[in-house]
Image (tube, rainbow, N blue to C red; front, side, top):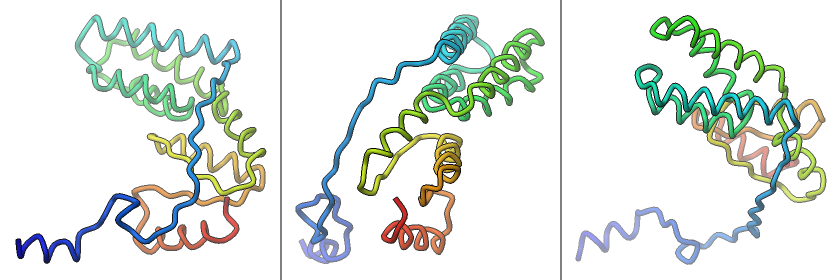
Length: 178
């Protein structure tokens, strides 16, 4: 009982009812994004390749193939990096490396992708600050580049930031950054 009493004074609370912080209204939105033909064909061909490699077993392993599919769903930039890496793996057959290299080239040709374009369109209609979560750093980097190109003041927050950098990012987000 004494331990619980002492720990209750120092433990981090994770329920809104337990903290004296006012949160902004949270709005989560799902948007169906139609893909242009080239992007849809890329995803279909990538999925076929992943299924064939998965059925064949061996390298790359199932986890790498699942990650590849998840990256493809995030952005062409995210999946391109992994495809380029697979194209150089000497434990893969030359024909498989060639297919991965061709897919990486196609991913690079897709530029930002339809989802990033839809995000930018939605952001234009929102006057409030926005927090965007993404699983892959390459997608985060892509969105940051697109926002910078459009002159949108923004901050990027990720796990590799130092404590000092995180504090600066949070300070800037409380200011004019969207």
